[in-house]
Image 1 (cartoon, helix red, strand yellow):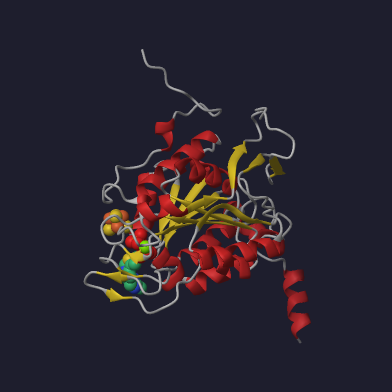
Image 2 (cartoon, helix red, strand yellow):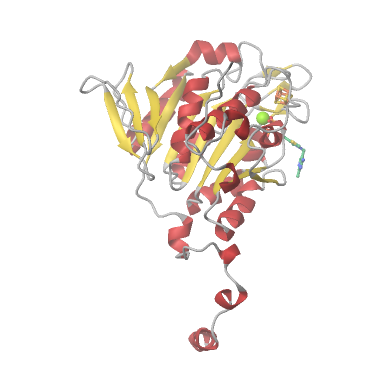
Length: 341
Ligand SMILES: Cc1ncc(C[n+]2csc(CCOP(=O)(O)OP(=O)(O)O)c2C)c(N)n1
Ligand code: SF4
Ligand SMILES: [Mg+2]
């Protein structure tokens, strides 16, 4: 008889699934949904303590296909960051997990994206990047390659927006890039992002098999497989698991994450220190010049205040405070009025 593996909170993987996907077969977004399920299962997260947030697009539909027991808010096109900001302010005990598209984030939503980053809203923000507006039949998005030609759409004359560079400029403390065709790396980076306190950006190249999967497109499976250059081999060892990893000295960089989990970055071809800000900038620039899909944890800075720190939030979520606790006292109202006169 087949046995079911349970995690530390007694759930099997099915406890993290959602509805059956209605996306095209082979769409990269489906593969990312599977890795979100695997990451949350591996970390033994309580699905009822997670809120899924998204905008509009095939990518933004995908939260329906994972974490069926979690809270969810499918918002407006490009407006997920402000809804997420409100949600974490109202209840910071929930883990916020945003899924967006390259159109949703880098085209219509770029303004909201930047302001979420500069406020360091504590959330995981995944961009399922396919270079097109999949849901509306394949128009170029702001991350499409300059000069790319698509049947029925024509030639894209504009430079692409690099969402990792935008995140870097806006002082984001966790910036990673991955490829839907590399599920192990996607899963480990999602786990690492879930243990980070602040905005964690994951730009995942996620091919649209219907509108943008020609071999020459930098958002296709063939191009990704041929040009992927992982920076390191990523493993996240959860806080509660005392797994001993057998690495030679100098082979691995170990980073303690905010919740006490250990992030192991095993060296591959090059020495790369994701905490070196200038190295991260040079890497993103060079990857663009060399047309390489450099994947892994690009930048990490654990020492920044989050929006919740800046706002001096009380431990009890605002949504759980009663009216008496929320209403300012007559004395403090008087003080405020006096300060304005
Ligand atoms: C305000 C507004 N403008 C335009 C649209 C039409 N629209 C729906 S989805 C979409 C693009 C989605 O692209 P992306 O975020 O890359 O998601 P994908 O479908 O590629 O996963 C657009 C333009 C809309 N729904 N709302
Ligand atoms: S149209 Fe493209 S992005 Fe949308 S579900 Fe199909 S393959 Fe995925
Ligand atoms: Mg898209």
